Length: 210
Length: 210
Image (cartoon, rainbow over all chains, first blue to last red; front, side, top):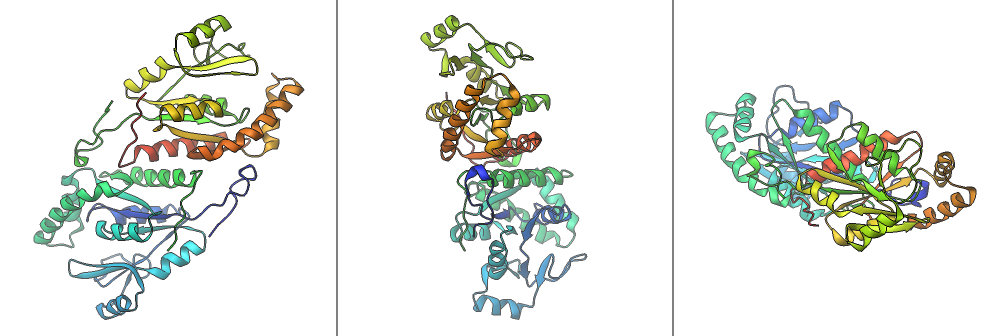
């Protein structure tokens, strides 16, 4: 899917849309980063994840997530409509294939947010994807963020924190790491934008086929 | 030469200074880019090239270049004091080894500007260097820039333009390409800074040994 010539002197060298995967441990702030990027109107296509979990206050269906019933989710699995899915903390989450394919076909760079296990699957399916691991400023910050969210019970927070520590070990399978420090969200967003800019400046661009 | 831990949760992962090579055809504006980066006080060490060519108006010895005599330059070659050198248009140009080594040892990222042939040498000596090719917005812009400089004769400009077209073919040996369009110098500088930021965000950092 070549998009556009980059420059006349670069003799018709094609550019390809990127598939940018934002991952990292639970509670690290992946959602906050994506919300901020959308506010900034960066020209990416943001893939909307499907989930069977209940909507949280302030969330919008079809924007933050596609909120679907468990029955509908199982149907999507059965029909092979998801690139990747997982059951996490009793709820389904998954990436609809058509969302990613359509966006890449339109030539826009595609951003998707996914947990650490899901990122490994994307990497297997699309080795040319740009894998970014979002790390917390510290584990204390991570706990604070989970507590502040107030959607989980104490036991859930403890469980998530222990899972998060385990998830940190997946870092080595990623290409880039971005710190999401407390009160410094924009630094994380800037870094992601730098990574995207650098990837677009590659002489030998990546080409994602899905 | 580990520099600093990046973050407590990243368990003492070391960072290494980068060796950033800014190259591209003659007249593309490599010097302008470096001057602008210095004005912006980006925290890099800028390697000062040694040259036997005469100083141009506004240039400062030891800052823009080390201006040396042909005799002194030949002595530097004989003593193996240069990482790389070339005789271009009748003048010597070369990179003093100590400049690069000292800067890397101090932990700062090192930027050096070098012609396309020299970049190939650096790549051989330091495969972990970040090679950036600066391309002109168009060949007409390149000619304009060479004419505007007014330091070359008509024949020299024609010769340089033809060399520049040949030099464009080296693009494929580079990792990144940045366009330096007329009147959009800051875009080129921003792109270089994005590339550096992305390289610093690598989970598996490059380590230059020289």
